[in-house]
Amino acid sequence: MIDRITELLGDEAESLLSHVCATIPKQQLHLPGPDYIDTVFVQSDRPAPVVRALATMLGHGRLGGTGYMSILPVDQGIEHSAAASFAPNPIYFDPAGIVELAIEAGCNAVCSTLGVLGSVARKYAHKIPFMLKINHNELLSLPAIHDETLFASVDQAFDMGAVAVGATVYFGSPESRRQIQEVSEAFARAHELGMACVLWAYLRNPAFVKGGVDYHTAADLTGQANHLAATIGADVVKQKQATNNGGYTAIGLGKTDKRVYAELTTDHPIDLTRYQVANCYMGRIGLINSGGASGAADFAEAVKTAVINKRAGGMGLISGRKAFQRPMAEGVKLLNAIQDVYLCPEVTVA
Image (cartoon, rainbow, N blue to C red; front, side, top):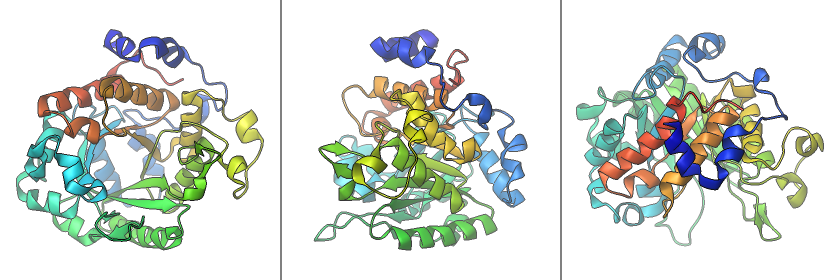
């Protein structure tokens, strides 16, 4: 297993697999593991049914019992348009194909929209944990806007047998205050009904691109988004993996501290992601990174992202387009390659 991982990492293998994090030591983190629910999550104020719901996801699939997650998310039919998402592989216009891919790949859960999951709920909700994504940004409005709006209610998720709900907040956008309020209220209701909550803690503002550099994935800004996500009740935070740093200082935004850049981070991708984990209450709230868009080097990129996430102290990967925009057999192999990183004992926390 480690040989295949090393092969896919190529020239970056040594840097990624042997790095020792000297910023925030792993001993200060609450790390994923077989006992995560019993020793970390159960200390929270979450009702017992929520604990059971999260345990259901963590106990399912190839990673079941490890404390790590591999989730298939397919909400791109709304977020990116069905044509742009499913034309490469039209079998996924049928919601059954989406769920079958997650089952065949041994994922912990499948996440999609009200329509997708609702259309096949009676066939599959007892076979794999469902996560219903309740808000979306759609692209048919003209002029185009970037605003996550509610497409479904938490009660609809409960009625179809979902164990979790997912939602997005575009932190930094003019609409973010409304989204924070909507999602906070929705997550409170989900917890009342015994469902776990996952927040896509994304940044969205044209001002976050400065001097030709895109700071939407800066460690300092995404770290604060993670902190806000944990604050409004997320049980798991989904975040794009950090690719740079210094967003606060470059943009002239808010408040920060020079020690964030001099002591708590370096330019190494594992250290940047470690800072994201630290902002998830030092790992009390799990961090899953997104898999990104599909491309020519999907297997290598997916494995690299998983290695960085695991070695930083993260809880897993949520990868969609890299898997479903290819034949199902290849999609299964890609998701299994991601899972192998978390199953491989030689890939340790840095």
